[in-house]
Image (cartoon, one colour):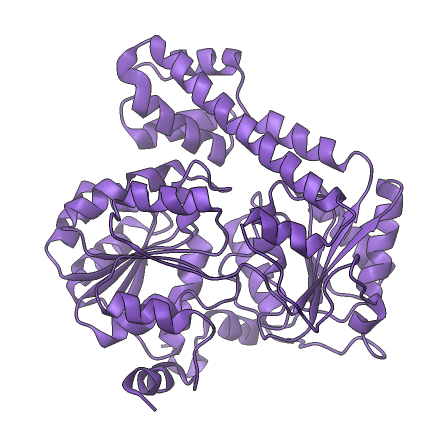
Length: 495
């Protein structure tokens, strides 16, 4: 056993790497800037955690979601690594100060792109040895990415201010254009590309067409009653997530929860942890659910409606079968599905009238935090406010001409989303091999396979049904025990 495998076993208890991990780890340890793509569930976090443990200095990880950061921090702590912290808007002033005081002692610091822009934080980071600069969910930096985050676009400049540490950009789903954009925006002129297939051979792909929404709801209930769980049902809106969870609860014996971005953070965390710890059979959710949910035994993912992009679809079905065992993705289709997504995209976009109104309202507001607060008070969603604030800061020096630039960029983004949505709808409507169409979108070819592929190539839903009654899952009887399991805190150590 070589030294790298010995370190893998010593620190993580694994005897072998997942496909692609070893090459990425070696590249980073050798000091190469690296752009890497591993499929969802491919073990991306290990690709910087192991190199971090084997080298001096602090690993700085930029992450887009608070829940994702907290989950990674807790996992490292449970493995015995105490030199880890997260720094983001969820912390109190006192908690932020505590992180800053121990910054030089940390091995891993997870940080949001917004928090990284703080002058105080940048000065503190410039004073310590940063071994690796990790950009997780790196597709968020690109306008071609399916989940563009404006704050990510500033990471290239921030990297320069940190003296250009070795950089690792990680993503699970990205087209060739997105990968090139990642390198350009991060200033990775001689980056090594380690791109692995987005395909998950152990996940069969089933598409089923029904007449209308009522039949789709009925069919969904039948499927979750029969399928081997646990499972996830992705819904187009928050309202649908709640309604479907209620209907499944009423129509089956399954313990069902719902999850979406409009819930309080504590409620979202509870649902996530209950699902991970087998206290729920399934969760009806929006696309807000998934990142950082480390549950290896999800057996099915059902989409109640067409996702907006092929990238989103591949990420979401990737929540299934992380243990490598046989799992299934089911896409339920009905006439009008595409129009629902088109309406959601149109609603999210801002009209010229909206932009004119906001432009006047923001007159005199200078700092970006104040901009976002004012925008959200004006009725914009967090995503809308984040994007508009980014463009306003970028173009406000142009005065009234800046309005036109904002309108053009927002219209471009809307048209791009509509184009991606049309592209995925076309793939799903094709009567040929569904997997082949998906892989072609990512410039890949389908490889010969022995496992069930898709509806077109032949698969039997009965192979994915529960044998006998659904197994009785974990039940907790005391709130103290539940708190212990969620927060990994032993009552023996509570004063």
